[in-house]
Image: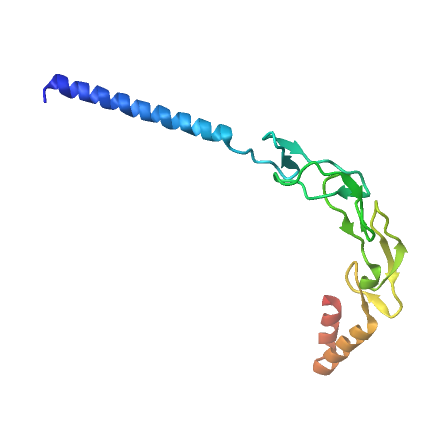
Length: 163
């Protein structure tokens, strides 16, 4: 090949390479323009392709369905179910009320749709263990007896303070 032919071949190759690069760039822009946006934890993907904020419910309410990370839709706020509450203005579902009886504690204040119940002192026959629970003194006596039989008074005291 002559030097002129070689030079023309190089120019043609460079032009083809440049065209391919432009096509790749254009294709990438088109793909990005038609891809779905990534919605955050409090947004759903609207049919028009944009992320829209989920409805925010007032205390005592929750959304009628899941919403966030692109899922869900235009749900409405509904009251919390019995035994649940929501104390904040947000998109979170209502939470289960604390059941004081499971913690061996008296019920001090009942749960309402806008606030959790409050537990009082330990029930009779129970002793404070670690907040918020109380433990039956019968269970505590059984553990103490087991450690007295198995070891020394030092072991018993370590058990008591570490428990």
